[in-house]
Length: 277
Picture (cartoon, helix red, strand yellow):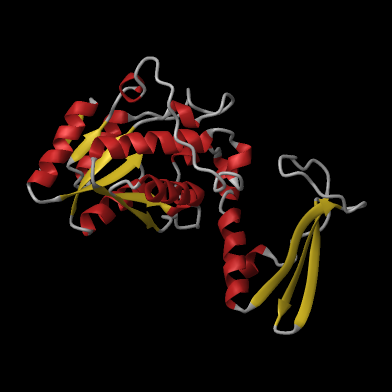
């Protein structure tokens, strides 16, 4: 079956109703486009649950801050539709901003507490924009199973809480992070990286891997702190390190308390690259 592209709320709502009237389930995959194999894994997951995959492609303006990348966010719509079709998606909802946000609209959906940590303080109003647009998508699609990647873990938890609190007829499913061979989590924004940045990016996954191995070995973390290397003063989250800083760790293994540290900007890596790769 070829992909049916809907560009209005009324058309997509009717298409989803037709799926349910035929006795099938809608498997909703909300995206902002610039699709990659991580998104396609979500389409595959929807189909694996016996649902008809319905992908939405909409770069949502209300979740971008004033200095973020809304204007330059990639929008290769024709390529996206070809990829979605090749992976068996049956419906695509590609609305305009005006279709999703009617003239004079004033309503936002806000989820408390869960947005007060992690990305929330760094991106004011971001999660209000996410919760609002996803609520709109759920209201348009109707009862469905919705598949979200766990890379945006905070977003996933916000959406789960929103669905529970608002009694929405949606089953929210989190899908494991899809990674490149070197560990880098797939993201549409990875295309912004130049060659040197792309080579360095997997260091995040390597650091997380070390944490996984430490947890599996039975470590109990006492503290992990990033502080000034001379006065040991706390370093604010938003500061970009220009000089040096102390990264210090204390953890228990059994009853034994172990400590270690490295002065970033001065000390070499404690373990050579070839030994931890």
